[in-house]
Amino acid sequence: MLTAVLSLTGALVYGAADFLGGLAAKRISAILATALGAASGLAMLLVVLPFLGGAWTAGDLAWGAAAGVAGTIAIGLLYACLAIGPMSILSPLTAVVSAITPMAWGLVVGGERFGPLGAWALALALVAVVLVGFVPERGAVRPSARGLLMAVGSGAGIGAYYILIAQTAEASGLVPLAATRGVTMVLGFATAGVLALVAARRAVRTIAGRPDASGGSDAPGATDASDADAVAAARATRASGIRLALWCGVVDVTANALLLLGIRAGDLSVAAVLGALYPAGTILLAAVVLRERIAPVQWAGLALALAAAGMLAAGG
Image (tube, rainbow, N blue to C red):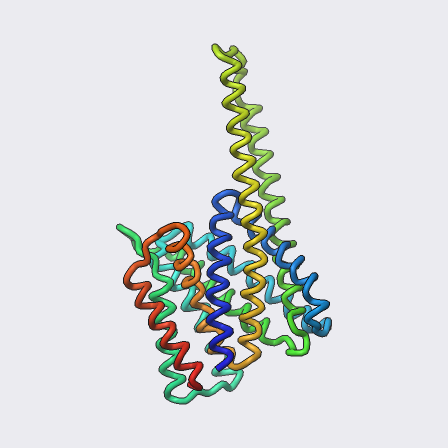
């Protein structure tokens, strides 16, 4: 089934985008990384869309914009809940909810039906989502009610993105993704700007409240040199973060294109469940690039994911 191939491929590519975004967020703020990624993704779309075609209609752009709002809120909640932790519980919870929400929509509202093999494959894929998304943590504590609500909200937001983007017409091609990237870019830069303004005001108040400490330095030349080195290092780190964020946007929009094509090629429920396996791409890249260890439970999840995808591709 083409849907299974496109969706699983899209999930792996999306995981690669998350990997790049995570590296970028360590160098610059997560919000700024998201905004820059959306900008580069939008720029890429605007370059390739004239060659790919697609109808620019108000309806499809509106669905795309609504999907962009849902996706941006979902990512914001995801970052917030993972910051609260524990990731070992909240990460797979988010992934499962993001799979179940559109799957339920497709089965109940969309009238999608599956044979016994397809039903088993979807169940197997959901188990794989949990195992792949599991992040081993030592001494993990119980999640708070706030963390659980944020995780469920994030998963529901991602699921809503699938449902909304699935409403676009096939004739629109990848045009709706331009609206999603545009909305994410505007919201991201606006939020980053507000946060930067708040931080600047706090810094001014802090400096104004300090006593005058201009008593001089024993080695002003050495101090100036160390300050210059620190500034240069900070600028280099920021520049690398910006580059990573821009590349993240290109990879991310590629993943979204594959997922959108997967939705249109078949059933929303299949595309959503396999699309929720995006952590697989992240952990595989982390293992190859950063030499991070893949937990046995995650290897089991990857194996189950391939088995479920094979069952669905076989016509389940």
